[in-house]
Length: 199
Image (cartoon, rainbow, N blue to C red; front, side, top):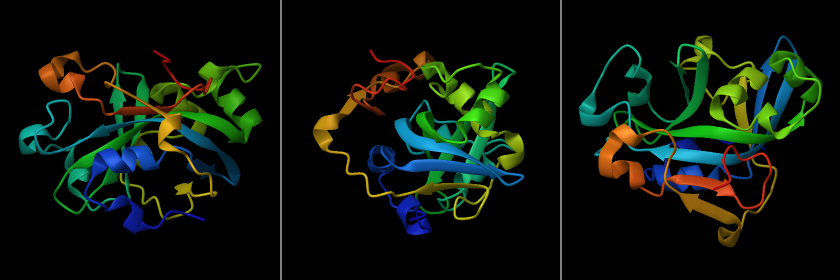
């Protein structure tokens, strides 16, 4: 069942990031379906989070979509080469987002291998937010894409993820955020080989 907008507009971005674990993320381009199980996420809060692009109500051409109502895609470029896929949450004006860091591929694996120029589905196929976007065909043209449509969406397939199966730790690559870099806002499925970093 495709997640409805009400899933994304809830006020607690940290809870949404946890609840996305075990859900299935899909993309469809030119009739080709690719996707898999979300196994790693990070939460970013527009209010008081120095790691968030919208910290201190920063509004730029890049961050403007973060202020929209939850349930749309925020895609931005890092290192001049990787597009990172984020899910905007909360109500309009709050600028919260969840970075999807890794999926366990289940659909369209052959297509993902072609996009990644790989011969076999090793964990680094979709383990990491940059390579995840390549495998799923997500780039900046999907900035603002509604996640309730037929291009990018998330489904609940009835997988129950128990609290004891979720690992919690600080987010990755945000040392500039000072004490906020230590917030335990990264979540991943324990023991899953598709997680980007297992430490």
